[in-house]
Image (cartoon, one colour):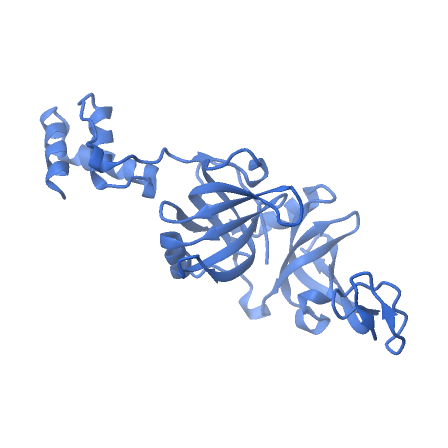
Length: 317
């Protein structure tokens, strides 16, 4: 504890506040502001001011970031540049990389079951991410992520994403898997949805398509050359589409897996799976999937210890 912090605590104590109460309130302030204070003395100054003890922060302390605003992924949009928020979602994709300075980072795509957003994780937040061993399908909460936007290289659209760095805390959350299928059934057609259940039946269909983009186009068989809209010219390649019937014990849902997922019927047959994708009238077209062994069925799909928060469902794999 620095000399300045000791003097501030002493001033608070002299006003009649017990040591026990001071420590309790400091702990509460630390939990509320997380990594947003740049110096430990700032918490003590905030506490003193709360008790009517006027102590001004010296310039050398700098400023502290305001407590983040809780925001759902679906509510994040262009025009909110630099806004400091708390949000959560299921990881559906992750990609390792490096910052401009050469330090490690990871780029995550997370979803709340309706919308998705990209999160760039670096600095202290990356160290926490690595320590907690996050994976696809895990639910993650960012406290103090910053909204960032930039113009797309392909068009004039603004791309909105989140950055999680020095002042961001991240947590792994859990949620009962029983809620997942209910949320799928209630999801609107065309939205991102999650399926959890046992694969009871599978079948596979094949088609010939472009080796570059996997589109069928005008390809007829594996021996006739064709030209694809993407610019490819030559022989097509055979691809396999897998359809799986997934049950939660009450209802069946068809999940379609396209070739790019690299999953075949033998990989998921009679196994519990978690899949995420776009919901149509009669099926889920999966964008990510994870299968489990029968002797290792997860009791928790994710963990939700958000006391007063509405349950936020999300997904992925």
